Image (cartoon, rainbow, N blue to C red; front, side, top):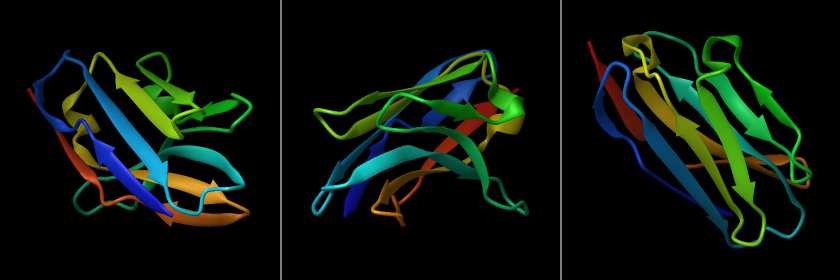
Length: 114
């Protein structure tokens, strides 16, 4: 399973970014997809996730600001991030679950300047 993430970058506080992550390879049985993030000196944390059926989970810190969505035909997950804050600065990692096994993307940097 390969995950190709894109969409990170530098944005001012209050701005928006959209992350994308496409899964390919042996993805029969692909179910959950989502995003984690890791800021310097902090543990990796769940940001948002979505099942293939559309059920979603969000971290409290991003509720109302981030929206996760999926295109199951393209095996792609998106995350629209709005009202970004400096504390959202982190490396964002895409994750996909296939038959109970988790696969990680390479990470994309999101930097929010104040």
